[in-house]
Length: 473
Image 1 (tube, rainbow, N blue to C red):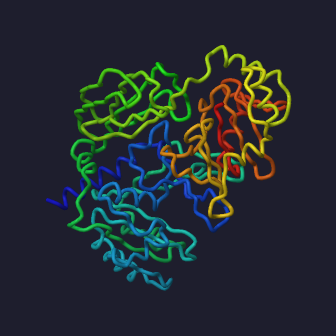
Image 2 (cartoon, rainbow, N blue to C red):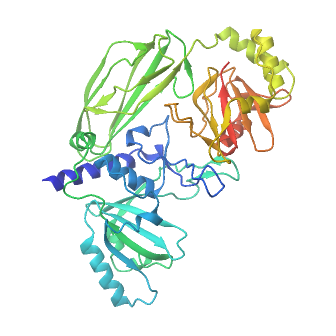
Image 3 (cartoon, helix red, strand yellow):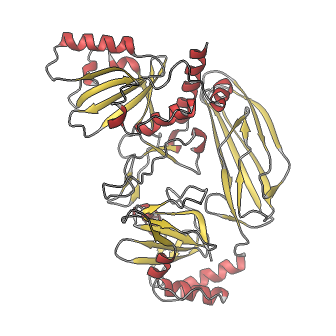
């Protein structure tokens, strides 16, 4: 019975990532290009509920497999890259290194042994002949294999063009396990590129699923939940303002599901508790909308009590400050259009004219350095949080996460993340720039104006810059 529970829990977790579609994207490239530092964008260990329209989850093949075993059993595999995973001898139950001289009969015998050895819950790992790359896939039974990959043009941040690339169907794929051993299967395990392949078995009979994995398996198999809130991420709600939550539940399976949704006002907000019950037919989805009011007692309002069928969903966070009133935003917009100057001088001029507010007398480079500090590694810098910075709204290929900031740094910048009056400071490794947001997708830099597609190019490039952050004076 234990084995059945283990398999059902593992299948549920593996498919929980799969069913989130484009909310899970492929990324294996380092943010730092020095070759000696791996400040990666992928996020192993993030639970599947983290992936929503507001929070893209970045994984690659090895971090997906690592996350599946971690989320199911709490097991932290001792390796996070395929080049190391294939060498986990204590977990290996099958291993073969190609000679290049295998006859058809020899290949057949090896694949027969491979098929007999492979059990649901195992992972298949391959390495290329030149050891340049590899792949790992999770066998979930029922002739199904799940893995994280991508097809052009999706996957990875394009550092040359400084632009994100997305796969519209997401990064988690499914294929038939018989592909490994059916006739003609030498296109795969015995393909020209493959040099080694193995089966690893990360867990045993004594490993029990976590309480959350068991709860998922009991009531959320092939049920995907997407929770978002407005305003969210980098946007501000004023004290007394409304925070709107949206929970979409999708039945991705072939059987009807009973759904029970509950939620409570988070700390720093008030409102009536939420309780909804309904049935979902196969492939049917439903969205439940509700709201709470911010009290102003908390700077960051974290919603972390949402449950679907008793399973805790992902946390969302809203930034709570007084912010600017519409009249002040209009004044900032007007000042952006009429003031002149370069970088920080322009920022100072806008705030002086619009709000009679005097900002520190710095240039753009001094402003950048004021909020960054060198890390232990020369090629990286750390971000210093202050009263004017926006939590989670910083990054760049040479930026490390601020350890005391509980909000994960921004992974990509999207339309609507900026508010009127925000000051974007970034370094392109040659110069430091400062821009002011003057309206919906309008960034001003004195003699430079970026609107629409031009503004989009600026924001898409930010993760590929040396470093960036946003001030909200």
